[in-house]
Length: 268
Image (cartoon, helix red, strand yellow):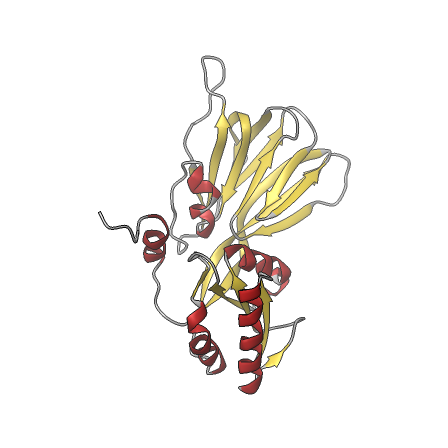
């Protein structure tokens, strides 16, 4: 089996990376940066996002696993003191592969340029660089609303616990093939109206954003910030591709939610 390791590049993460490399090579695994079967991310959820974008072209075959060297993450759930147990499990292939939905982002341009297509693991946002964002929102080809505000955020189910949650969106279990549109500081008064709630859209639905004012937009895809000019429309849909995670033990999604947002070491 071929593997590669990405580190957050702090001292502890780098130390664990070197230990894991030594263990895995001793077990007969092969380091392959170009075409790994499994990618070990050491750091946090941000490190795993970087790993995903490095290998997103290998989504049908590569599996990811995360070891956190900070706080417990939704993607990085192994602890530093478990490094030996983890690498032994990898070497013995004692894992199952689970798949989570991804978001496809297609940006179309006014002057016939080729569209830009991206995959997001967590979310994509759209904002206007200088002024209020004004976008017509179409669902399945039908006009839904004219949005005015700071921006819009479309998230995956696994990304629903990130920026989407901070915006008041719902937490969606990643077994559901869906995407969620949340508003960022919408303008609602006697003149302007938006639905005011996040929308959870199933896989067979699409969402098209059409600019009403301004041709240039700041579009984020996970941690990537991209300025796109002369935008005609931005289309969101649940991607055909899925991200694959190597699971070595049971850690249900709602346990992750509880551990991240509810559990506390404080005694009352």
